[in-house]
Length: 85
Image (tube, rainbow, N blue to C red):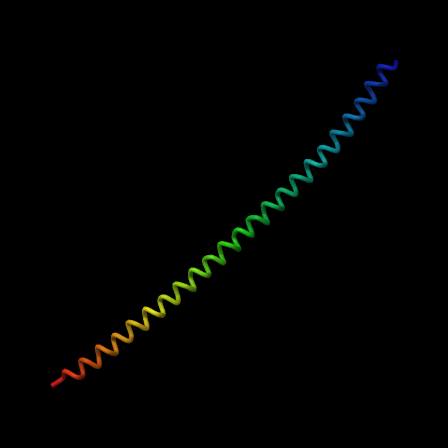
């Protein structure tokens, strides 16, 4: 009879342990999912920021080039006027 009680106690102990582990597993899965979402968002924010910086640099470079072209156009028009007969 004592052996049966030991088995019943051990079974109850194992069931409790299984329940606790399943609860921890579910919690960890939920936490991991949340962390993955957060990481994805942070990576997207970093990428967007980097692209914004690159785009701003390209806009600046485009403006500088357009200004240089415009200054050559003005010089070219002025020198053409000086050669007219």
